[in-house]
Image (cartoon, rainbow, N blue to C red; front, side, top):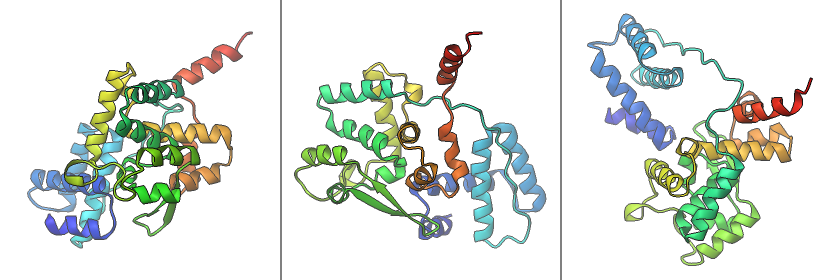
Length: 264
């Protein structure tokens, strides 16, 4: 397993993905006596009966990567189809976002205030947020190289840049969001901290998680600039089809639109 983890790291997989893939392979090894086409198909059936489609596809992706790593001379598992909902679920609203940052600002909780602001104003994934350094704020952007060796530039808006430089006036280098022992705060640490902040300021905890702010960024951006190709580049999407989900409204927004439009 150690060699597989090293292989993933050398391929440039994000820390979260490495952890997720490692867990999936440990689960596979624990539940199968030997790797055969039949045992792989049986494991897939167990996954489908036990987990949501998105989780199943994540585990299948991990398994296929592992099978390639060990040069398994057999099948590769096919993913399951995910039925996309015609609306977004559990996405933080602008009102809830403002309620959260207003409370954090009023209490002077600048660390979590800027975590929320950077998530909401840059569209960064939680794994990318952990990489921000003061030097990136000074420059106004951070460049990320994906596992496909594709360059993505995450822009820091001027208003956020100026505000955060005032907060981080000294030191002028190092991680923007350090955790224990000056290492980057963990993804789990961010998720837990956001839930605590939501509870503190009376915001629905179900809508306060790292990826929710990425949805918020995309929805707000597309409302102000309808260039979906630009948004796809900003989000780091390979296909515009992936970006189209952000053109959808939440269930509450759909309800409000119907109530307003239907008067016959």
